[in-house]
Length: 253
Image 1 (spheres, rainbow, N blue to C red):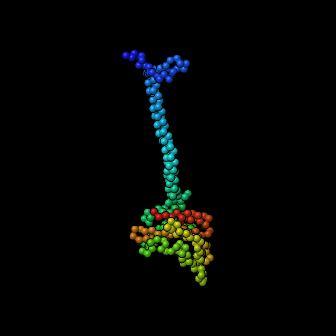
Image 2: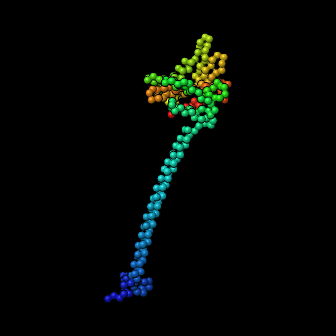
């Protein structure tokens, strides 16, 4: 029967000998097993470390790919919010006039007065003007339209519409000559027609006019909105840019 001590040694092939030929090389079995176990543990630890490292590396790569998307989405959100804020920013020294009945809004100077004519079912007018006496003002006139007019293009292109409007006001060809009307510029934008022109009666100052003309329904029929700002040449420096800003700010709500 093998002794207890022999259980701790493992016979190695005779070809494996100690250097110098001093007998066969023996290893303690228990130590060898412990070394094998340690080696296996190290391999498992390496695998686990590699596994964690791989997962961590994968997560890092995922984050690196996701981070630009997160940043891009946040950038879009900030940009969208900035644009939304910019859309409702009111210029300095202006305030918003919001007509909830007729569904429009417009920027007007802080200290300007508001006056309204007696409205009826087909026509209404609201005027905005400075406290001090002046020949400068902005007005919003609303009138009903027939069923044939469904959009601004029903009146023709903006160039034809502007030419018809201004030529219809001109009386300079009469004898004696009447009011002289001259078209300066026109354009179509966001469903509105913008027209700039001048009017001058003989012997009087020239008036500059800016109009924004659009169409909207009140639920029963379409109505024509004509926003007109005007100032005389003597008041151009004081009111010119203010009136242009007011007319350009008109929006349906």
